[in-house]
Every structure is written in C-alpha cells, then in structure tokens.
Length: 497
Image (cartoon, rainbow, N blue to C red; front, side, top):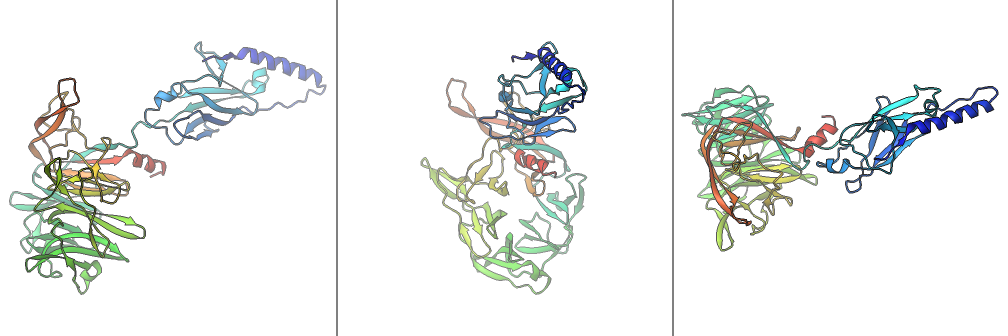
C-alpha cells in the first residue's frame, strides 16, 4: 500500500506549535491529549455488516461476530472504511519498519493482527512524546463452517458390548442396555466416561433387550415379550401391574396440559390398538384409555420418536420398521421407504405421501431426532442422514456438511476405525441420545468386526459416471462419539455458556 512518511507531518506540527507559542505571550496554551480511535469499520461489502468493538483500556479493536469461513480470501486485501480520531494521526509500520501514515484509499492485509499508533498533535510536535496510543486490530474469522456438523471422539465403553443396545437418560445418568452372553446388562455413567456394568435383576423374565424403554420422572418402563416391566433405578426390574393385556411396545410420551401422556400399542383379538395412560396415574389408580385402532401402515418395531413444540402445544413425530415394507415406484423399481407419523396428543396422522423426489429410505433400525429446528432420520449402516424442514412431510438427503465422519478409502484402506482414521459406514449396533442443553448428539457404539459397505466412486474414465465399490472389512471398539453443529457451538460460546 502507498503510505506518507510521518516525518513531514511531524515537521509541520512542530512549526505550527512554534508559531502559535510565539503569538501567546502567556505561553499558556493547552494542547489536546486525544490520541484515541473513536470509530472503526471495514468495507465488508458482500459479507454483511460487522460491528467492531474498541476496547480503549486494552487497546484492542475486534469484531465480536466472526466473519464467515474462508473470509481470509477477502480480508487479505480489504479497505478500512472508517478510522476516526479527534485530532490524531494514525500510523503503521511500513516495509522498512518505519511509522508511516495509513492511507485509507489503499487496501490492507488483515489476515493477521495489525498494530497501529495514534499520535496526538503534541506527540507529533515533540512537546509530549508519550501521548501516543497503540491499538491492535484483529479481524476474527470462523475457523469452522457454521453449517457443518463437528464430530469428537469421547472415549471407550466396554468391549464386551457387542450386541444391539438401547440407551436412556434417567436420574442424571445415562443407562445403556445390551445382551452379553446369556444375560442382559446395564452400563451406567454420568458423563460418558467411567462406565460401570451390572447385571439386570428381575423378578420376571426380562432377560432380553427390551424392544422399548421409556424413562419417566420416577420410574422406567420397558416392554419385552408383550409384557411391561418397571424399575426405579434401571437395575432391578419387576413385572408391572399397571398395564393389562398384551402390551407390544411403548410409542411415545408427550406433555399435554401439564400432564405427561404415555402412548403404547396393545394387541386385542388379533388387532393392534393405541392406548394411553397419564404418568400421574401410575402412582395412583391406573386408567388405560383406548384411542383408536393402529393403521396397517404404522411401524410395528424399532420405534423412534422425537418431540417438538408447535405454537403452544407439543407434538411427536414417530418412525420405525414396517412389516411388510412400504414401497414406492422409482424408475419402475419398488423401493422400501420410511413413513413418518405425527401425534398431537389426540390424533395420529400419517405425514405426507412418499414420492420419488421427497422420500426417506427404509431402515431396519431408524432413529429420528429434532435438532436445530429440523428433523433428521438415519439408521443402520450410517451412510447418510435425511432431513425434513416441513415436520416430516417430505424428506431429502442432508447436506454433505451435515454428515457422519467417513474415511477416504481412495487414499488408503483401513482395517480398524480409530479416532485418527474414522469410518462410520457399515456400523449397525448403536444407540443415540441428545444433550439438549449443550446441543450435542451422542452415538454409542457396540464393538463390531468384519464391517463392510458399498459406495459409489467415479469411474477411471473422464466422465461423471460412477460405479459401486466394496469397502472393508474393518472393525472398531465399543466407543462413544458426539457431534454438534458449529453454529450452535458459536451461539453457546457467545451466550457465555
């Protein structure tokens, strides 16, 4: 950038002060000590408006809201739009390490912090050389894409966990259930570390992994073998006397008018029916209420639900495994799909119709979550996530930024997925919990071996065509991973949490 040498300006002020001093017989003139920057702004056209904070005590100028990722390619040659002082002159070091006046008509490189000085008129005249104030200008830029999902390795569990699992949060602890050998075990922790294992104690026959586990305020309910079991600590279980008949599975819990309504499915005379019961009634006189017959298109197994607020009311969206599979025609081929259902505490509604451009593929073990005001579904193999912006009516594959950590097999093959070389595709035995306070998504994995998957890769010819390629086998330990959207991380940091 072009700069004007400070010596000329200093000489000018020196002469001015000498002349002014001679005109004053009393020699009693007070000179302004103002050597501070009062306003600063960059020309961020195309990026939006970014306010800069001036910390006068520490001599810092910075933007509280960071510029977008890759803004380095903009601020390497950017104009200072505003740089206001009362009466001072602003300088920076030139290539010869000399103080030279900043020319605002020239662009400047702000990829690294820049130190500037403000010289008061007294300092320039040599009358009060200490009246010079230094500032460091720092332009903050996001180092992580705000729209990307950031994954972190949390730690190991126990490698004896090799089968399917289910995890719940209860009484400020996380409980993971899995079958080990001939016994059902529960693994406890309070922060996804220091896991302790215990055998599940039962008075009945709860020695299989429950097909549904529902944590409430005071008790945990579970279904297995068309029976309901209950526990107050997650370890000791007993057959519940609060439910009658063949209870197949719990479907959801929902806050309705200051009460928690529990919904489940019972089989009666060969037909399935929705039933509900209030959590408060479990401690008093249970009253089971039949809602309606279950549609043949409602999932029968591996049900997953999430809750969200719509206006003043809470609602559920439920997905699961369909048997027989629900299929749609895509390019003259039958494709199994996932159908989501909505529940507002009164009525069950099938959400939308799956079409060739707005469907979610079928999963044997689907998981649905509500995250950052959107709905996401993923399932076995963990190859991709599907997102819905209209409450489960239509689905599409989520952005590549919002995805699982996958290894680049074109660079090197792996035989074991590790923290450094991570592969999620092909994994099938896992459970999911959310930390809504810190906005984390946790995935807990059982130990697995001989995992394989198939991915589409570009053909060697110079075309856009792809061809399927088998990957693996590889293995991984029993471990915990967590993910958080970078934007939510930024928001939490800015709020001081």
